Image (cartoon, rainbow, N blue to C red; front, top):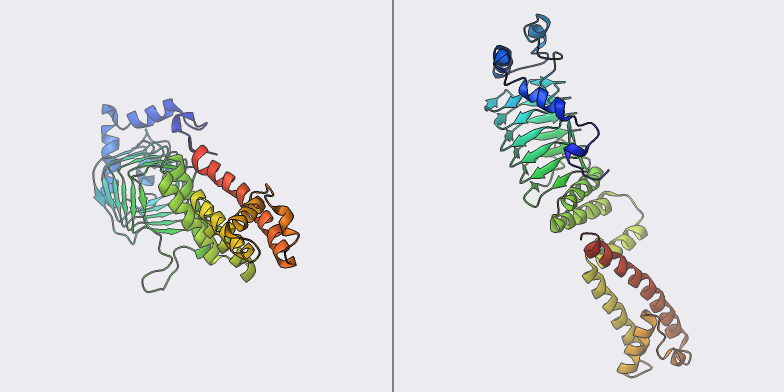
Length: 340
């Protein structure tokens, strides 16, 4: 499914969004909000709201893990060796603060709004971001383990030094100001692999499609190239298939550069022309090679008088022309027409 704004998604309910946001700002709920905020400031933890909820001290919540619409407007820091938020529902929550050292385990970040927030040394385990809006957000040295971003919009958001383990971006839209640093595959010591090398291709492909949806075509192409390189580097095809793949990727610029393919086409014609120079002057040799490549058959009758290997070369040049011309049209249409 391509990227769509939250308002157009089937699961989005404007009334629910307003209700969850407003409940934290009502005067009669000030005491309950204070209890929740104090519990977070004490370090939260697993089921940190369970006791107060069971005592009836938090009647505005729908469950012990309900923090829907909660406004994170003040910075907070946590010890990184503890489970801080476990199974918490942060749907419609707003993050506009600096959060340090928090662990989010199996948390739901649906329809979130994050603006000028900063996450430092945080960990997101099995957490789900869906239809979120990220604007001027920074993630520094964070870890995303089996976390997913789906149908999220990123504006000028930075993932700096972050580690991704089986994490994915799907159907997202990334602006040109959004940056995702290369995910390291191992620790500096080489002790642990954060991302299986084979997953890198899918990771980069998801980011590439996100940049394309956000109109950042150059960044999309760069990430697409990284995806293809990772696929070829960490895949396990036979040596012959790997060689063919490398040649095809070079000619097509990993499917993003019709101009490079045009250069390759010129090289094929030039090489064929050089071979025909043994039997014809340069002007006629070029005409024969071009006629074979573009299949208009100029001076093809003369080829019948040439040695057998030049006849084979003529046929091979024609086949290369048919293939490369079709590929060039496809790449050109994909590069320039599909993005209008």
